Length: 291
Image 1: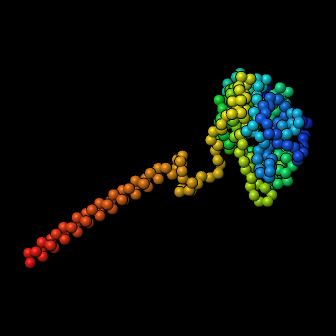
Image 2: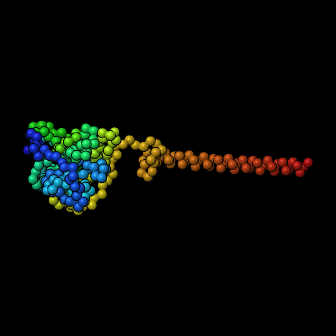
Image 3: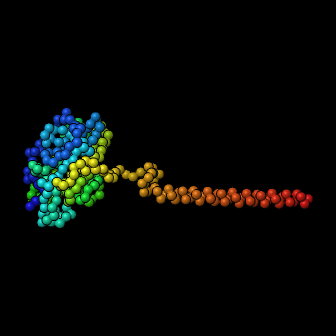
């Protein structure tokens, strides 16, 4: 048995184009089956990341108002094959899998860079990154070219956030998404691109998964994301200091101690000098009286 699904030849279902006037749906949605893609898009000329849903009428959806429900129809067993050791769970374990090839009863999640305005403005392609994962188990995304090909891991929640993946312009691709335990997952995904006008666009959005029949989609819709790792270099010392800044805190405390110590020494010097001046004045008065 091969986990997920791997096309032996190009899947004709990947041949698609996206009209420029497809709307952005405003209502919340739970997607349990059908074809959906994650992809960059401009909304009111703002770069963002949306979910393209063409299960019925083609629309774009806001990830904050969309739940991808990976039902128990997606349960598979980890094969007795060391090639799948990257999953980090024993062979024979049940896992939920969004497959690389379409399963009619499982939501089919991929990604595309086919929005017409995106294709006109990006320079060659975009970078997708896994910026963070909140959930009860691990998440692994991988592709496999065929039954006898080795799996190629793209994202794994046990690895440090980032794991950049380059996606050429006008690309439409699917992969295997493996969830090792049922429950609610929030996947922070960052999409960045150099634009042909010399600017750079970047945004991070959260995909909401309810994994398993028993998992509440309402809970997934209401879940609050945790911290997202920012790949930008940290601020230089003295810049951006504030609450929660683990680097500047000790230096700030040390600086306050030094300042307090300096003030104490200065005060002591003033007191001692005052006493010396007072004694000198008393001696001068005594001498004058004796004369």
